[in-house]
Length: 313
Image (cartoon, rainbow, N blue to C red; front, side, top):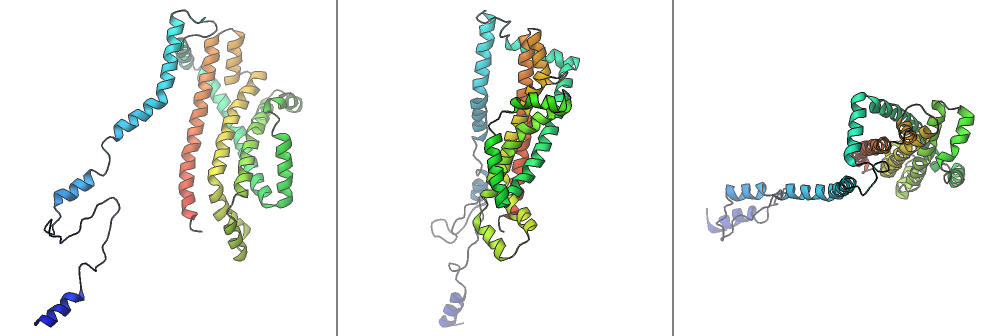
């Protein structure tokens, strides 16, 4: 083969002109350079891949945990020391160790589990009713103009009324049974969820609305495939606020008229002048509220991941 043919064949495929593939997380090195002799060693590749994760990650996680838990530990320590040295009257504010012992004794006797089960059932029932009603009404009222104005008026008038103000009326309507307590919980959780749903519907991207109108997309398909996925983050925020209000309202309802539940436990401790029982009920309530909020956070992460599947619509 002569020199002209060699130049033609060598120009037919030039490695410099060939497309290079890049992989995320891996560093590439140009082959054929004179400095490295055109060879990438296995040791270099393994070193690049093996050190892609920072080695100080465990220390960072430990530091973040200390920042979150440290203030609480310091507060409990100061509290315990103050009680041990008599700076605080145990009748008014018992030591943390006394409260822990009270919680442990009620747990072993089964008393705490009974109160937790009763209050949890009331909260789940009231929150479930409020969520279904608020989500349905929020979507419908957000889509229909006249109903939207009616919803705005209703929210402005009724939202400022605290749920505890409805307790006398709920007793007149339903008596002192379970219906009155569920009614108070529904009222407390309803408006935060409704307001969040209405705002989420109003913030739907106008481009999607116009595109659906031009393409004559059925209303139900538009709600299911566009509106709900786009509104999920704000709706979930409303649900988390609603579950918090549910726990607050169940205690308020149980303080008035109940024979079981966390609110009854707190009131019973006050009647018996047992501050450790009162604080044990309050701590239990806080733990339950944190657990339910974490459950909704987990559901939110899963649903937002599902929402990403509709981002191309």
